[in-house]
Amino acid sequence: MGFRFRPGRIVRFLKGDFGKPLIKLKSFVVQIVDLVTKAIIPRRCASCGAILVLEGLALPLCPECSKAVFPLEATFDVSSQLARPSACGSKPAMNVTSVFAYQGLIPALILKLKYGRAFWLAKDMGRLMAVVSAKYGPFDFIVAVPASPGRQLKRGYNQAFLLAKEISLVLHTSILPRAIYHKKTNKSQRDLSLAERWERASISFFKGQPFPKGAKILLVDDVVTSGATLTVCADILFECGASSVTAVTIASALTS
Image 1 (tube, rainbow, N blue to C red):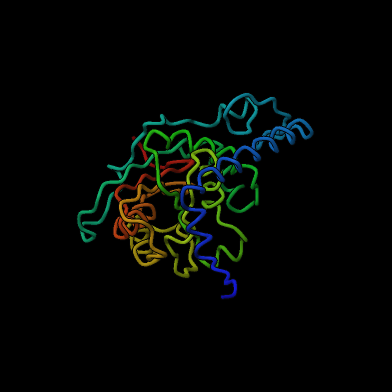
Image 2 (image 1 turned 60 degrees about the horizontal axis):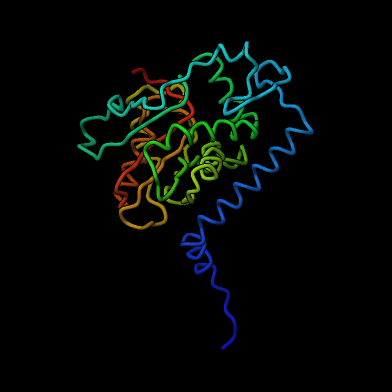
């Protein structure tokens, strides 16, 4: 019999026992590249452009600009504020944790990542998100909230997936890239009311490729405002067999 190329077997191989060592190896290589890059090219403040001397895990901000960001506690849980319309019925609970309040410089930094192709911000943001979400782990898979096809085509990338890739390297957890699909939508949610956000979210997302039943999922997005998008995506993951869903964002517009 001749050789037959079976991509499905390769995918199953990478998601199996050999998957995590490969992610760890990739994480190690990325760390080495980062160290070399920082030694050659000085980092600058993402807001004012001042040269930075960074130590530890932090956003690329100078001491002065850092005063305009407001961290949330890693244990901050906003799941009780996800005001689901009564018509949606009772659903399994979901933990939601965020790194920063959606105030000060954070909205501008997220816009840089989302629309300004500031991919380098995803590294620092993703690593911080990994730290605050680790207390809910370990996780079997990571799922990024998908962008609509039109926005994905226009930008050329999905900022939530960029964040998920960085979290994957820190937590050594595989990403499920097609667990949820996003239908085509043309209107931004930015100016929609709470009721309109729920209506839009409920018809925008649908089931993608299956994953093992009982999986613990980490759901990733850039910001939580009403909670509609995260909740609808979590409901889909629960319907597909997830035993638990934890959502993590870089920022939260919800209050404690």
